[in-house]
Amino acid sequence: MTKTILVTGGAGYVGSHACKALAAAGYTPVSFDNLSNGHEWAVKWGPLVVGDVLNPDDLDAAFAAHKPVAVMHFAALIEVGESVKYPEKFHRTNVTGSFNVLKAMGRANVDRIVFSSTCAVHGDVGGALIKESSPIDPISPYAKTKAEVEGLLADFSLSDGLKAVALRYFNASGADPDGELGEAHDPESHLIPIACQAALGQRDGMFIYGDDYDTPDGTCLRDYIHVADLAEAHVKALKRLDGAVPGVEAFCLGGGVGTSVREVLDCVKKISGVDFSVKLQARRPGDAPSLVADLSKARTVLGWTPSHSDLTTIIKTAWAWHQKHHHH
Ligand code: UDP
Image 1 (cartoon, rainbow, N blue to C red):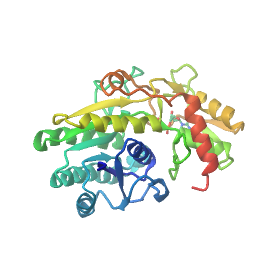
Image 2 (image 1 turned 180 degrees about the horizontal axis):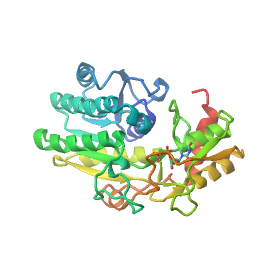
Image 3 (image 1 turned 120 degrees about the vertical axis):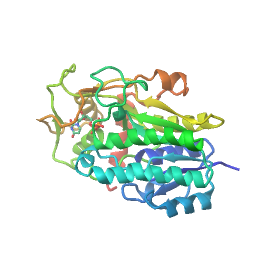
Image 4 (image 1 turned 135 degrees about the horizontal axis):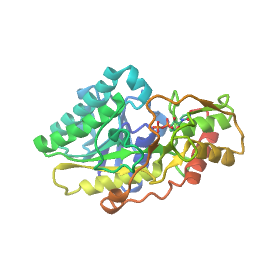
């Protein structure tokens, strides 16, 4: 009998890629999603339960109907700018929602969870490589909710014997190499999809937010991690929880390389063959100059190493997806 995994946010960008990786590893992913940002078309490898993490009855019904052995918890609001405007909404969905998931797990006797966290829990470390032991110092309300949930995981490991892995993502990017899934946020705020939309003529050019940072070309350095590599890390994390002792363990997941905004845009222009307009704008508030992962712990402890996260593969897969699916 295949093992069932409840995937909250399974219709979303990273969640749907994780479902594909779970199915490939022999699990049955059950997506639990309110479809506020997720897409029904992205649920292809198991059933979809339309439900809300803010409704404990929805969660109880999903656990009762599908009897998962573990949870992957992606369901959350993710837009940093919006979190500055509406901190209460973010706190409710991300923190109360996670609390509800943990309580429902307790009622259903499920004790393993892989949690979707962010490198932003570390805030701005001043250009040093970020590792799991770097200080927790989130800046945005969004990042604060993720840090708070990591704290909840630790609390529940003591009170309820919870076994948890928190995966701190750097810049999730790219699309399924088989072309079955991709990124589709609305509104879109991320660099690579915006550049692909500009190359497709769906927007009238785009902006670079600041080129006066203390970095090699003056634009911000980010660590882009291919979503298929991220999905693979979730499966490894899940397997690691088999037979684990209660506790919470964190891993930083990036490609391990800093890439500038200009390098990304040059690569999108090269791969698309379109020289779209790029204008300079003022810095975007809250952007750190450089956020790059130290992958040592993920490599040695999780046994994971990214294999699709070179810039060319990321942009090629993203571009293929955007060309095919611009109606989404
Ligand atoms: N960025 C940009 N123009 C855009 C969108 C993003 O110059 O239209 C920059 C942004 O300022 C940051 C980097 O691209 O330095 C990555 O931004 P994104 O929103 O993709 O991810 P973040 O690192 O903020 O999570």
